[in-house]
Image (cartoon, rainbow, N blue to C red; front, side, top):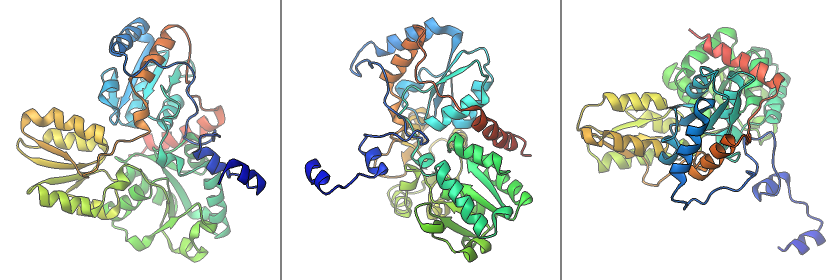
Length: 394
């Protein structure tokens, strides 16, 4: 249908359609907006030298953080590498750095802004580097969910637990309603704390981490869990289902980890006899149940460091990290492969490339602040409260 035909029928594109077409932006979403300024060409042979020169000119004024899922061309300029929360804490430990350049995604930069000093500026090299999982829970949707829980008469029994991979708005909602944040490393401790405070947990936004932690680690049953779908009336659940549930899981997932399947596990075992299957807890429940080992990004790295020479591993996590680990441990005779046959990078994380990093560093070196990520004071206060509850966990 042409634009003229659409106008004749007086059909108005929905906000979602406009967003997907790139003609509108959602300021409360993890999706970024257009990146101002002219980026250097990706074919520029001097990009590495330019990045190095700009970083050297900035000296101690800049601190570059590199998430494990970043591409190698970016990681080489990181002062520290790690997962999202580790990097945010590393930034907070460097108060002398005027600029924190976060090579990760939007929610990570928000967390760094929440934890760093007011005088520090957090910068994201490409504002379009968002997170599909974090996008799956907006502040409006979660507020509506709370209304549903209230109408069902269970809200007073519910403690929200939000995964680190969530927007500042969701972290603030969690803090305001007496909940805590968790990482993939401490999700079990966070849930234990939450069940000491109330009878039920609303787990945001990753259903798989919530389900795997509750069932695999804490001994609950799948029947103890219900799935709240924000795109259905009342989340697609009855009041009775909400009253009976212990874990109310948000219908969200990681687009990378969610692609691994039971077929992937069976296939790699058939192809590589004796292989150890190691997956992230953001994977589907059936994948986690079929794996030999399950753990966070840091757990995966440490497990491979401790693995004996000659051992074989299939890793279910983001490809940049798997490839980097395969290259790192190849001299030790460790065979490391990606769990799925299909190549899968984190597409939004990969938006942070060398041209964007060069543009960012050169702009800062010229005294021009670009792509600052700033969380408003009220949101920051409640989000920080939720993060502090996590930090206080035993």
